[in-house]
Structures are given as C-alpha cells and as structure tokens.
Image (cartoon, helix red, strand yellow):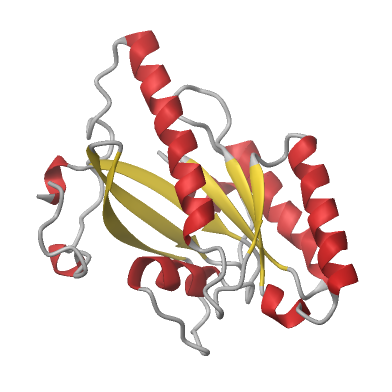
Length: 216
C-alpha cells in the first residue's frame, strides 16, 4: 500500500521547451509524445519503487519554465530531496538561462539535513546532435567542468525521444538521496519515514499500473 512508502520528492527544472514534461512522462509511464502543452505552474506524478529492500514513492515535480522568481521557487522546492536540471543541448544559447534556473532553486532550497540539495544536469535532445560529434564532445567537456566545480553531482547526455539515458540519472540521484537520508537518520536518531511527507493528496487511481503486486 502506498501509505507505507517513503516519499522522495525530486523537482525537475529548466527553461520552457527543454523536455521536462517529456522526461517525466517517459520515466513514469514509458512513452513519448511529440506535442506537449507548456507546464504553466507545476505538475507532479509518481512511481512506486522497491529500492534496497524498502518501498519508495518517487514524486517527480515538473516545474513550469516561465517563472524563476525566488518566491515561486521556495514554494515548489519545499521538502524536496533532489533536483534535476534539464538543458536543451541542441541550443547553444540555452545554457545561461538554464543556470539561472539552477541558481534560483539552489539559493531557495535545502535538504532535510540543512545542506544544499543534490543537483544533476541533464543535457537533453542529443538525438539532434548525432551528426555533430564536435558539438557533443564540447557539451560533455563543459558539463564535466560544472560537475568538477561542484555545481552538479553528475551529468547525463539524454534523448527523451529516443529513450536514451532516462533511468540512469534518476537511479543515481535516488541512491545519493537515500544515502543522505540514512546518514541524517543515524546521526540524529530521527525517524524519517513519512513523518514530513503528509501534505500531498494523491490520487490512488494514478498508481503505477505496471506493478500489479506492489512492494508495499
């Protein structure tokens, strides 16, 4: 039953049109649509996973790409555990705007342990650059520099359309989040599970249909 699952809230940020909603739909439901309506404010979906022998409800919050104000960021990042920053790799002038999004969320968010959230960078739409190896290499080198500088804990080159590297960044981020939650729990004797995450009114009809016999 979903009420026994531990919630992990991951927010998805980036400019309009970079593929945030497509990424969420691909990971949650396993399909891709060519046309999506812009996310005006925010939307969230979830999937139930068994991870390290425990049951987790992974909530992906798709934050609209229009409003980068600190007040809005503070509302939607509350109680978050991690952040995925999506950039359109096919647009060279897109990354500066992407980093503005990252800065706003970084400044206005905090993990349960009081430290900053873990951020992962996704360079999406690499299917549009398959014939430009030089550009791909440059994007990879630039992304690694941001990881080395501490802006991100990792980066991934993805194509939501071609279903390339969709599971990998989320699995990596979930592992980081669980490690930090367990470390925090051990250091404070804090009973984490479902103590904070009681503000969401979830529709059980949206439960992941692919897991008929859930882990909890």
